[in-house]
Length: 243
Image 1 (tube, rainbow, N blue to C red):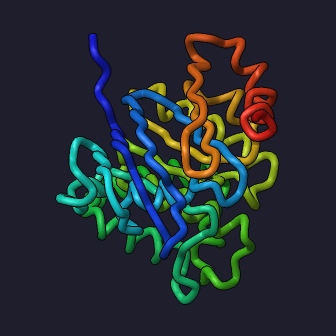
Image 2 (tube, helix red, strand yellow):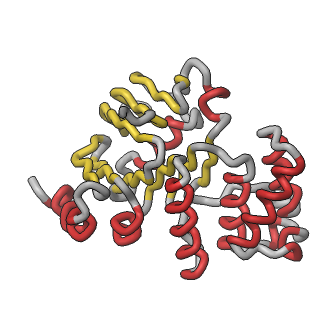
């Protein structure tokens, strides 16, 4: 039985002026997958995500998210997606509660679902009502990241995209987030993450792609070939240090 494709990236090219950053990436990510996207800084990981989510335009190729083209039907493509950027993006003058309420209203979340989702997520990520009643500008980096994680899941999306999600999180929260990502995909949903933590990616991901200089240089099925979990760091260094 063929798996449903949650993300299709077809021959993606992206330039900043004369500098070509993405040089023809093609990639498919399936329902129920926890997919890792790894590479050094500046090789196109975040740019690929920003193109995928319609944050940045691209030069050529196409991207289908939830079976909708991000170029032709961006609102439909993005509606069932939760996104967490590498730097927390939230409104400093809002309280935590107000920010999550705002995000829920954008996605037209029913009140009952909002209350249930919020209670579950704040407990899971250890963000108290006291903190959620404070203004975001009083938050530490880690608290802002927790808030963005909650906001990204408040509408219970089928695709969860996380760019360096564990940066700034304490060890306990990072571990809890790893469990959440695994549970999320075990329920049939899809998770796409970038991370510099190769050990984490090797432990939790089902498949991994390595990107170098705007091209995918290797894709590895860790679920079917568990030996790749132990080899991933070596494969990564080989990709960058080889000829």
